[in-house]
Image (cartoon, rainbow, N blue to C red):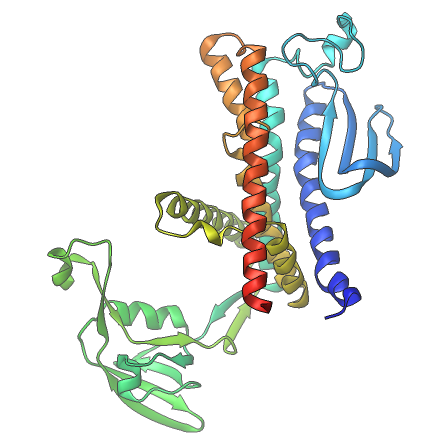
Length: 381
């Protein structure tokens, strides 16, 4: 792959997706700041020198900066949250300045402004999923066999890739999840499958083997009635047999909320498994992994790109809610402490906490990038 191809396939989609997500996140902060009467001095997509910008009627400088790997909103009075000194001049604020200063807003207002960034990412994910569901439809895997796993009940019964399962014990099915539900509920029960293979209709008998939940108690898992033992046929679905149906407006929105919750829960579960040691931390990816997935999503088409955009937006929202100083979650922890104490934490404690948080974030970025290079060496080495 030459350099130009790499830029077009990976770098451009990555920067485009990142720019959209940064804009959404910072727009959340911006809108709540404006709503609460805070003067916003700068809204920047990217860091470094300004490439292009303009001033709006409220005095905010909107700018596109030279390093497109993030962004920020600079609010008046945000620079020194303890003393209330103006960001640019070493003097006390005037009464008019205090009215538009972030520092002089009450605790509820400051909390709302900080929390609005991550919440905007979750709301954006819901809206993107909603758009996909309503405009393009929801894909449903049909009851077709994409792969037969070796040494399973399916291989023993004679299933082949490409088979379309029409019914099980006389019960007609069309979707793969129906197949999974019936098989799962019948471990060690012989089932009759009506199968379409080419132009011929066949009848195959298969007895699903028992799959035991590895987290279940050994004594309990010996009994199917406990619900811990499930039937396993041994087939994977066919990605070529998919039905796509557009949802209604309301149902698409409800489904968008459910999809956002599903991915949020799964991401948190995965992180929890990394912390507990059940999964390797080497799975953690950095900028290079995001760039790779962005390029692959873009090559998959508009729906693939939008779906990746929504999932990455959820990731960005979650990361920013982590209780790490310098992230939004760290600020929220400080505000929680302020609510309990009745006054802010000391300036020195906050300063050292932010330094620690910055070091922690940098180390995490280095570790994730190291994992990225390791995967690249495995792939091309």
